[in-house]
Image 1 (cartoon, rainbow, N blue to C red):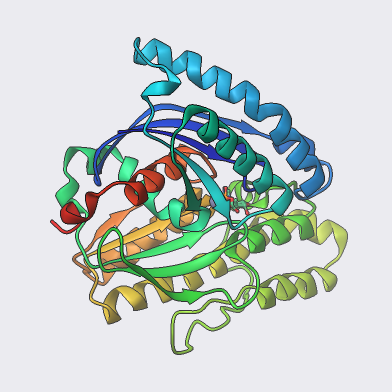
Image 2 (cartoon, rainbow, N blue to C red):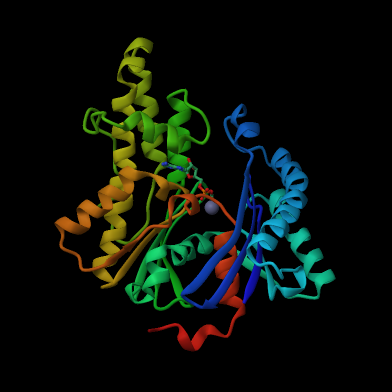
Length: 341
Ligand code: KG4
Ligand code: ZN
């Protein structure tokens, strides 16, 4: 089955062609992402109107390029060969989503193919299906599973009974984890997006130099909260002199990052134990953070949890159309009988 996928929910324009043979067997034929990073950087965040214009400009170029690339890999490829068009329906920035929705529906109409709407947040979870280890041995993806999605707009925790049946069990009460990184970076006079900046500053720095709160870490349930953490950083900075901030910037970033990492891990691992899951997924833009992933691995080891721990390949942590294609294929197909192995 061939899926042509389109992603335009925020500031990355993505187009992909995915070949799927079963729910656990997906191959990337083409995966193109055009980042608008340089355009929004000077504004310190994504400007929706500018982003949607860029999608409008870039999407037709990417569609043509994807066609050419697909031809190189599948010499007989034509748009007639695709089985469906998957597109990001929501959530995201409305003017940006509309560019992808209109393009997908127009292509689907003229090609006489089904257009399948996909949820962007959930698709982050399914990006782990493109991991080589899952492709080589799908049996390591054991159910039930739990999945943490940590992105710029969302921080959510899911329970997966199987590949098609999932339930949200936790979410952030205020800021998303990615937002906490972005806002923290801004307070430290860093660029957008803030995650990679904070991660870089934190390398070899002292994570315990500053004490920042871990809101809700001891609360019942699986919800998160990051707004208080950002305020705590602000208050700490207000008490420091400019040169002192410069001197301690790395330690400030590392301590701030550790607070986010610990909060995410505490609630996710609580869910792992309470729900007795056999697989834990951490996905979304923030899962590109090495400290977060190393901390999860440390804790899983220390607590001797017998689980499969899955994180998408780094190039699929942030927004892309490949994950939209994978979830679109799963939704569209009659794969249900294969779902539990
Ligand atoms: O999933 P994503 O690409 O877009 C959304 O769906 O929101 O996530 C973007 C978020 C941004 O907040 C960015 O700062 C964060 O992911 N991010 C990181 C890292 N790389 C990206 N956060 C922490 N460490 C990173 N290395
Ligand atoms: Zn995303």
